[in-house]
Image (cartoon, rainbow over all chains, first blue to last red; front, side, top):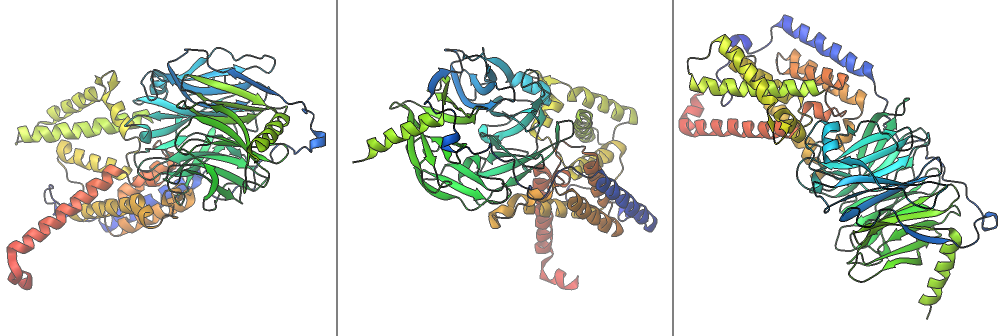
Length: 409
Length: 206
């Protein structure tokens, strides 16, 4: 007899032979139904990723005059604290940035804000509140303690996606991801949908960086897990015919323990580079390589670049080189630098210093390229504002040369 | 989907209230009083604590209760409200055994095999449904009523009844897993205590 339960009557000990036949038929019917419903998700590696923008030779490069500009995405004192910006270039040519701001990181008054830099204008629009705790609670039908990191990106069909973190229980390690889409470049949004990505109460999946796009329409979004074990993951989102989310699944990269906030840089139609934030005592940026469009990954190896347990981002330039932005320190986030690799991440050449002030914080950088090939960078400036920097390859090369001269004996 | 979760919370609250009522009134409640407890449970589910209804608090914490866990709630409800026992001891043992095994494999396998990603298999719709169907057929063919909970899980998976689209979430969840481990431990302890009480001679005679 089972503890806590009364002895069962003999009649309910076992099913009768007739009931067994009925039950088996019922099970087969349910199986046929479940199989018949099918699923739109794919369980195999994507057939390659969307080709990055065409490479241009130096001679074909039209933007030969060095360009550099610095500005602000968030107005002064808009919120006491800001962090975690994400940036994308929209099909219309506008830039759209998203970040979270409030009294402090993780505060209940924290909200997600967006600002737009119209292609024809030189200034960012007034921040617009996109999502706060109360709105998320209403859309997701559950208690929401706080919202956090968000990324926005347009897919190849022009639909804009927003993936954001919300927490119902505990701290950031209790995070879950939610998705919403916009057919009008972020002016209106669909209702949010909660994704279930973890078997243990769906706890602890976070997002930080932009995705890659597979040729079959799937979106490979780099995400990560933080509770107990820390490791990167790739969330594969499958858009339906109507553009909404039809299916999703996450692949855990359990072998890359201690590494989070993966940033993906497509090298060609099959190979993708992954940059990783190092939470181990080594404090060195790591790299992993995928040869099958982001489905499987090599073991992450150290680079010779330091990483103070801070987010990094990367971008494939139109001349084929890789640009990264990172904190060049092993203990603090008091500087922000660029580096360029001409050999697909094997070696790095120091680039410009974007920020450097002792005891201050410059962090969570995001890179995007606009239609003209100009590069845009947003980042957290001392937790007070979101800063925007734009430059071109000519400026990047000019600064790399200057850095080389400064470094030479 | 919200209606599904509200129903589950009402059912569990109803079972809880009825169980508490049985302790207070050992001779049992009349059918009308038991139905009244159902209304009270429905009211409690919508009772707002800090502006949030109780059902929503439960849903926030545990968005994907497995079908076996919901089935356990239903069986408990039938026992205290309808005063009918739907499961026999073999069913209970099968349920606890399945919960303990499935939960241990799913939640702890990565401690042993770091490259194995068992949760991902739950998104392989054909594979997951076939495995679940085979398990349900075997259980029912063996005469276990508990197999019907696997049929319910299979049907719910086909309907995408839970928020999750992963088959694992339809058959196991952390609460069911921990409950299963606890119940198996209690069964084992009780058996060990009885064996000690009876002594070695009793074991020989048995």
